Image (cartoon, rainbow, N blue to C red; front, side, top):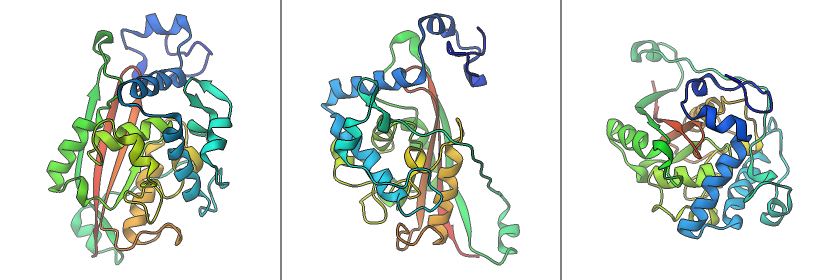
Length: 279
């Protein structure tokens, strides 16, 4: 059973040596119910609703409709999200990301090389990673490791949440986004539901434009590598090269946060802060 889900699917290598694995696989655990567990706990602790979760998908679909390469370009309503099949209570089908083929690449160079390229480049202003273990079952399912990685990335970059113009968030599920906006300081802990319900994530006019290409919920999600498209779209926003309908005006600082593992068990987070730099 090592290295396999109960359904026989390949398992990410980071999970292979987890001591809890032998207690999880025989009982048929999988990634969706683990995130559903976190969503249900967030609901219990803070009163978050299924309608608020659905707003994350609605925003993603409104952004994706302008992306000619998005897999799902049709906008959806809250009611349509709630009417989609239940996968693991409280997560419906539309609360879950799509799975696609895909790829992406970034070229990281020195400042001297960047100045020689003759085009606008983007500067890495801050970065950090963090790991959140399962703590022997004493795991707070309402927070992610972004609370640690984000704080350190902000410190390195010399900025704070109010300085961020655009955000790329790993959106494996709608609850993933809500917990990240809280942990990264864009709203108070427990207030992520009302925050996304306000339309904050819609690009370009929301208070926190997020995943302007539609993200993993609508654009693409290449396996467990959904963080790379977030970086690519953030660079486009900073360069002014995003799809015109979702392009922010004067986008100067962007934050990208990726998540690996499961917020329902053990996970890691990586945060990068990018700045527009004209060379």
